[in-house]
Image 1 (cartoon, rainbow, N blue to C red):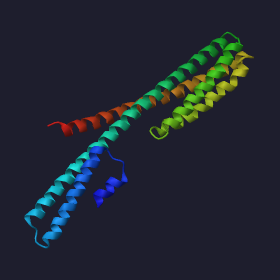
Image 2 (image 1 turned 180 degrees about the horizontal axis):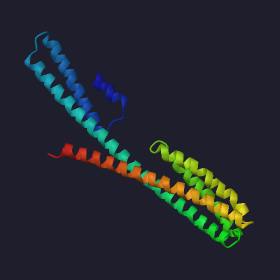
Image 3 (image 1 turned 45 degrees about the vertical axis):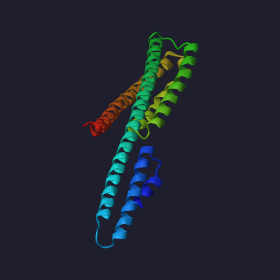
Image 4 (image 1 turned 30 degrees about the vertical axis):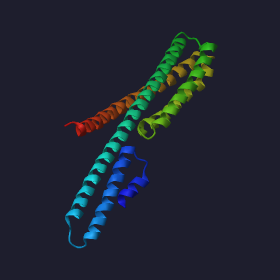
Length: 219
């Protein structure tokens, strides 16, 4: 009955379902044989019990392999997603660095940012904010600390965007943009670094699971 419950509860690979069905059938036959034998075990009932035990062991082995396969696939997906998220943050940080440099050059020259540059930077800030928000949402469960740091990074990103209107008017405004963009870049870079560390950890876990699976099939 327990074997049948396992089969009914979860959607399992065909190989596992086959082994579970085999184990359930063997267990049923063993139970019938023991019932027919009464109090005294008979050779047929003992043979049926042994057959059932072997079938259950095979089913357990198949289940263990299926679990390992699922874990390996999940880790592989996680590694890919974290790596892509880190790349997106690195690009966003580079954009903030570029804006900070551009604004600093204008402020050092005693000039405001040009109107075209400010408009382009405004659109860029929205893109950076979207990247940080999307990555934070995507890694909320796998890297919660990084998600929280990205939420905090929204403040300097938004502040730089807001300061761009003043940057068109005065060097002081450009200086403020540079300061906020630099702060945003640092936070985004740190978040990307943290995700790279998570990628390394997940990759190690993936290698461990793969090695364990290989050890099970290697004579």
